[in-house]
Image (cartoon, rainbow, N blue to C red; front, side, top):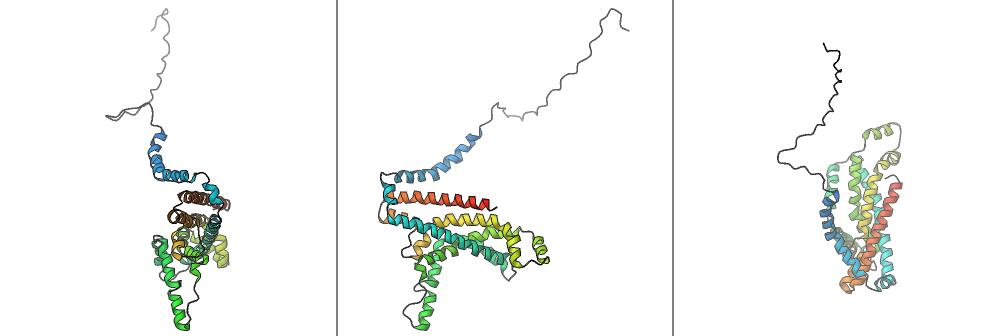
Length: 298
């Protein structure tokens, strides 16, 4: 019992909880400052600048010769090459989108013997160089090709009727033939993920195949079409081997004009000007295509 004169004891104050810290690993050092993220980004950026940006900077620097741009822009050859390049790229892209969509539909939804093998062969086709496809077309439809040989052998004519490979239509056919698998590949991947129950429900409700394609399959395929189409558009703008191997008369694209200026005429300043314009057109049309496809819901 406490005495009357003793002061009352103060209530015990609970101690503040001590924050738990995980023990440091043996031999490890704790640093007060973390390494900034931009430090880790320096090595890949430096490699990118050295491998890609530095050569491009050299081309741009060479194109800045006084009067080079004015001289190139004033030439009729440059204007014709620019128009030809854009028209061929847009035409080939449209043809690849239509043909690739139809072929992908048949492979994915129409059962036939060897369908799986055909679908796998698309990947193999992507590894072929462009000049190989053009060379095959020359063997079939060239001036001395199989089709003209059969025609002259049967009719006795001096030459066959298939002379379109040396025209812009021949270049367009070769580009559509070569670049269509680049549209088919993402489409086949998109069709493989399509829910088959949607197709069965639409069919059970009496929808015709054309309506099923338009209302069910096509909306699901828009992102794949946008991806494949944008890739084909850029590749067609920069295609050189097909134009060279077809030997099309009067068909000069921007890459072919770069080759002509640099190799045949040794006019490196003009070649660099055309190359810079080619890059600008490629990036601009690609950006425009992506904006349009995004607004379309791709």
